Length: 356
Image (cartoon, rainbow, N blue to C red; front, top):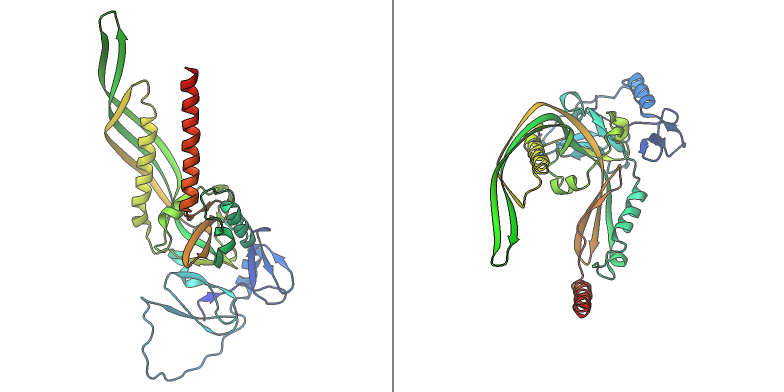
């Protein structure tokens, strides 16, 4: 039996896709709408009813694909072979264009615990990108007009979500400086202190992407996600999108989560050292306890553009619509913009000096 499945309409048998606007599975052929639970129950009830024909052919010549390089699956809609990378969990058939869930990549120990469904549609993503470019004073003048959209990808990126409690300790060298004068002298008194701080914090759902293909900095930049939308994982949410399973383990990702916990604890403790002229951290330690981790699929749009022969990639949070990515800078407009700021500052200083 095939290890992949695409969700089909219980009414007409056509492929279904997940629609972010209604949070339901939609059949483009007959216009029916279904919630993911109904489709999952239907799939479970009808699974195996239509048996597959079997045939044996003697193979000769050639070398089989290595499991370490690619995987070969059979599309349940048209019967075509689909070649994927080992980490691919959802793909499109190159022949019938139906979205197919590769269940072997998401079942058992690899099955996600939870998912945040898409709320931003493909058209929303393009509109948000246009708004992102609008009113950027340093953009080349014809950037928007000459920008060519090459590809729009709705991806479920694998994330590890870490929960823990942490206790931090830190020491600081702090100074208080006092100045005064009499008729003969100016005085400066410097008093130095060794400051100690200790405190604890609880952390919930620290995200770390579990894909080597995803840019870590870009994935962190589209945060935060609203975890009130987090729901139990179901393959119906993947219909119409692409997804990969993780290829960075929870143990590997834990290093990044630990670093984020330490930065947060250090910043929180430092914020309590107030009333000094200067503060220099001299040491810190953090103990992380009660760590738990969930495997989640979080929605991301990737938009690939071409501008004058150069490729630009932008990421959009598929839930909140936050856009991140580098925009080109026009040297001429940058010079004019900073020149205008300099001229305005110079005029202000001149006006102040005139009043004095």
